[in-house]
Length: 489
Image (cartoon, rainbow, N blue to C red; front, side, top):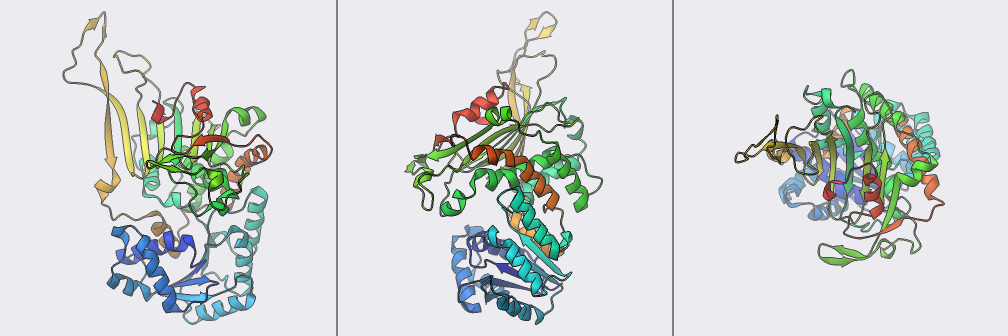
C-alpha cells in the first residue's frame, strides 16, 4: 500500500521529539508500508537534503537504543521530503496538491501538528485545494480547542469538509502499551470482570505525575494549564477505559459508544463540590534532582502574575449502577516528587476478618503506565514462620503484604511498539479504535467547563514547592473519605 504522510509543523517540537522517532521505529521494525513518503511542511526555507540533515541532527537527542545508525538513517531519509508552506496562503496548498498528484498514493495522511488556532484554517484550505477526497485522513493533536465552544467550532468546521471516519483526533495515552493491556485485562480475561464494580472496589486513583517543569513550553503552557493539557484528554480517557461497560465487539464505534456513556455518567459539578473536590496548585521554587529549580512564574515565557495551574486534583464519581458511590480521584501536575503515571484500584476489605493484618494493608491492583509498564497485584499472605495462636474460634495469625509483579517490558521485550508508532500505523491503515470521536471530546469539555469558569474568578492556584506531591489540600481532599494517596499509605 502506498501512502503520503504530510506533516504540518514538520520542523516543530512534536515532529522531531515524537513523530519522526516513531516513524523511524516503524521503519526499523518493518511495519511501515514499503511504498511511503513523509513530507515535512513548515515556513522554513529548506531543501529536501537540508530537512534530512535537520532531522538527523535531532535524532541525537533520542535515547540510545532508538537512535538510528548512519546506515539506518540513510535508508530512512529516502522517505523524507520537504515543502515550504505559508499555511495562510491558498497558493501554497495548490503546490502541495501538485506534489501529491505526482504519485496519487492509496492513502494521504495530513498530520496537523501546529498551534490549535490553525486547525480550522488548515482543514478548510485542504478542502479548498481539493485534498479532502476519500483517501485523505486528517490527524488533529490535542488540545482541540480551549473550551467547549471553541471545540465545537473546530469540529463543525472539520465536519463540513471531512467525514467523521476521516478525522483522527489523537490522544497518545490511548496508544500506550499499558493502556492497551488495561483493555486486554478487562475484556480478554474472566478474572476481573465479576469484581470490577462497586461491591468490591473501595476507590480508584489516577496519577499522572511529572518531575519536570514546563521546560521550553512556558508560553504555550501558560495559555493552557494542567486541566486542559492533561485532565480533559489523557486523564478522562483513562477514566473511560476503567469505567466503561464491555463493548459488543472490538469495532471503533462500539468502543467509543461505551466510553461516551462513562463521560455522560460523570457527576456534574456543583458549587459545593467545586469547593471541596477540585484542587489546583502552582509550583514554587524547590528542589529537583538534588538541585534548586525555579518556580513556575520564573520560567521563560510565563507571565510573572500567572494564575495558570500546574497541578490539579479532583474527586468525582461515575453515577451508574456499576460504580455508584465509588470515589474516583484524579491528580496530575508538573514538578512533583517523581515521574509516575499509574492507576490504582483499591479493593474493599474482607467482610469478616479472621486474621490479623498490618494497619492500612489493602488489596489493590496497580496499572503502571510510566516510566514502568506493567501490573502489580497487592495481596496479603501468611509468612512461613508465622505461628498461629488460638483465640476462641479465631486464628490470630499475622498476615504480611505480598506482591505479584508483571513487568511488560521484561515479559514481552523492550522492542515493543510505542504509543505514537502504534497510532501512526493505525492512521495509515484507517483504524479508528484508539482515536477520539467528536461527541466524546465535546462531552469531556462539557464536564471540565465548570472548573474553567470557577477558576477564572477564584483566589488563584495554591502554591506547592517543586519536588513535592502538590498542595496539602490534595491530601486533605482524599482524607475526608478516609483514604490516602499511595505515597502516604
